[in-house]
Length: 290
View 1 (cartoon, rainbow, N blue to C red):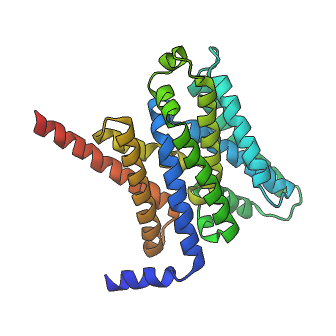
View 2: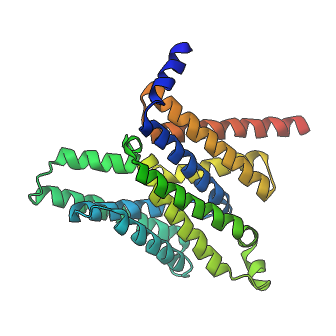
View 3: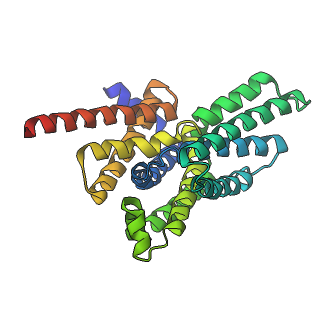
């Protein structure tokens, strides 16, 4: 045990570990806030679709040599969120089909562009491209290369996400539970659905370095599903979801440091373990109440 604490103490003397912990907790907080809304609206996989769009945008930024790839990734992902919402409301293309269409298309296009660039004389080998793709999809060790600027950007964006959620909490609650009733009472549900989609897009962009584009949905979905196994009220589920997400993020980062495992995959594994623990708790509570 003393060796473990000694290892952690040694690692936390380095700034990049502290940066990773700060960014990890902020992303976990933001993801869990809107995860409940997405799960209850049966739109959970919008995170998956938008994360693949972000991967495609990152591929374009990489092959065009853009220094700050956020200049491409952020607007493309936000525009895709708007397009996805509009397409999903089309009677000819349902929400799940629209997500699948955009998700698979962007993923395939991004990977194809990176391979074409590698063969067109850019000096990068196929192994380099494969490493870049794996790092982008699964996070790899990119969370440990964050700079102070990255941390401040994440802090600013997280503050905006939390502020939007708190200010529009009642409207988000109304749109989540009964959109038709919300419309009847004068709530502009389309605008708030759009707001939710844009905020999720922002969360996904800042989370790509953390867990990778393929694992972002897990941060959004699992804490919400875990909390819903035990609690019933909207506020209780959100609070529990936030607590679960923060604990899993912190423990996942610490375990990945000690065990030398991928950060993103370790955090998602922690979320899965907590989900099954809450499922068992819910099952046991129902048995006792009978």
